[in-house]
Image 1 (cartoon, rainbow, N blue to C red):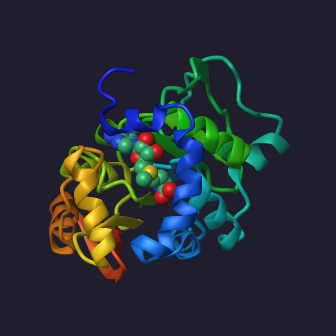
Image 2 (cartoon, protein in one colour; image 1 turned 180 degrees about the horizontal axis):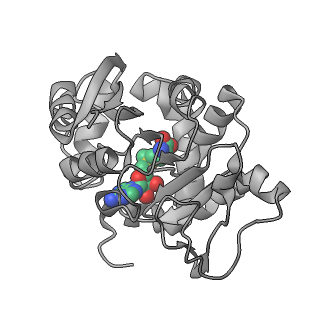
Image 3 (cartoon, protein in one colour; image 1 turned 90 degrees about the vertical axis):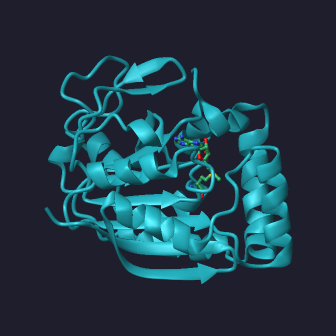
Length: 259
Ligand SMILES: C[S@@+](CC[C@H](N)C(=O)[O-])C[C@H]1O[C@@H](n2cnc3c(N)ncnc32)[C@H](O)[C@@H]1O
């Protein structure tokens, strides 16, 4: 897929598996916040939703799986299976459960999930630009989500499709943070909850040093302050409710501005 930017790093052999290992080891030691803490933060948004939830970037699904467990959320995928409408290997003109995705694409296959929105359980739409991490997420989360390979700056969903949005550890990688924030705001329903985590230029010396090295080889953006991130979210139409630092990681939660 052309124009993959930094997501291309996650396509390399063994990187998704190494990423899982790395996240478990470095989250607390280097970045100053644990996977469990991030999952609890995500769970507050994912678990409370009464309609489709956007998760971008889902990565390998490590945090998402913990968040689903922590929220005790019954998945739309399970409901879809119960209703006999699992993933099909054919185009779905109705779109992925009404969120406006024409189809979801993974490893060359084209599939759609039909009628999942007809169930009571909210649909989790897991988006990432890397097919390799999406495959790993699918192995981990199975039918608890539908998987869409897409660029966060050009989401293939209709406006106001989602009742909640979670973006974990993406904004320090996304090449166009303002475009990404605008897409989150566009696809979220007015006044719906949005939760974002991202690295900042604060925190431990080691975290700041590692970040600068990664930025030097263009693996991540130049470190941005929490205030810079917050301004980007506000300019996109996301209204802050709380912003906290856990080590290097900004935990921002708020709502999409009402119309
Ligand atoms: C650090 S991982 C975070 C994954 C997961 N949310 C977590 O916290 O473990 C960053 C992810 O962003 C994805 N990514 C990078 N650029 C992207 C883009 N423009 N659009 C969508 N996903 C992107 C990468 O493929 C990678 O899976």
